[in-house]
Length: 321
Image 1 (cartoon, rainbow, N blue to C red):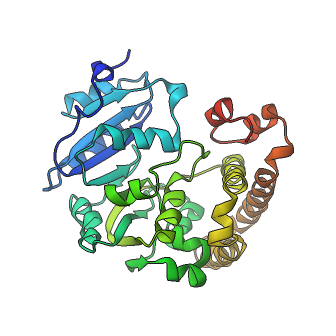
Image 2 (tube, rainbow, N blue to C red):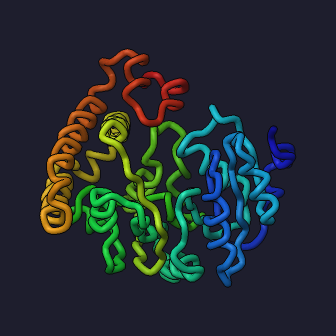
Image 3 (cartoon, rainbow, N blue to C red):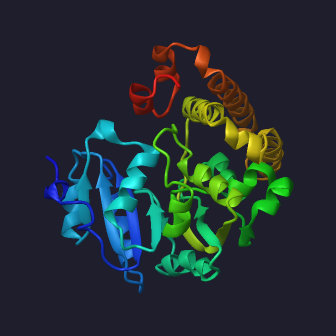
């Protein structure tokens, strides 16, 4: 049953200058931990959950915790469009913070730290640090260490030549945006299979905005993906790069960064979990195959894409270009 919030006119949810937006679906106990950590912050922020018609009581739990909930049909969820809906529903929020239901802030101060870089008026977006959950596999733990270092940084368009695709690295599992910068690049796209965060970051860099990384703004967030899930995820990355060809043209190809990751992973596993190396090698191969197939998705029937993809709902709306 959908929340009464569905009936409210756009803009009625707005208050304050900081908005926190959480897409959710059958979040279970995760939503209590996620919201509890956010509500412990000393900063006042409007929290909005966009619930994709959960059947486990997620909406009811959130409302009992004093959080606004808007329900949408499950099939209507879209990585970009759903997050843009949050932008539209919080029109008075100058800073928009996005966090996923399975991301738990390490400290209430993480909210303060993720908005601190906006003191620089040219910073358009900030990516928070993600630490592995206690139950993370060695492979998942390394991925977090590789992508989320200890040192904070700020990237500009000039850094693209040095960093390539890594310059636009950003994750909406925990990220913040300046509204004016977000709207300057057209907001979140509704046509991408996922990667709406890096899409926006790349656009911002090329429009002269800075993209920051705050290691002090930390959360626990990791996934122990199976080999098949890794394949599907990288298939979708290939689709994103294929359909948004400008991204690769402007940011560079991902092969160099991929090679660095594989070497780093091998060194990490040899030192800490050598028995996992064979599994990691298989995963690397499956990632590559998935990515290459995603790049060539135009020649595939929609029925096959649906089977290969992690984001299956996308293909019901966008079967072809």
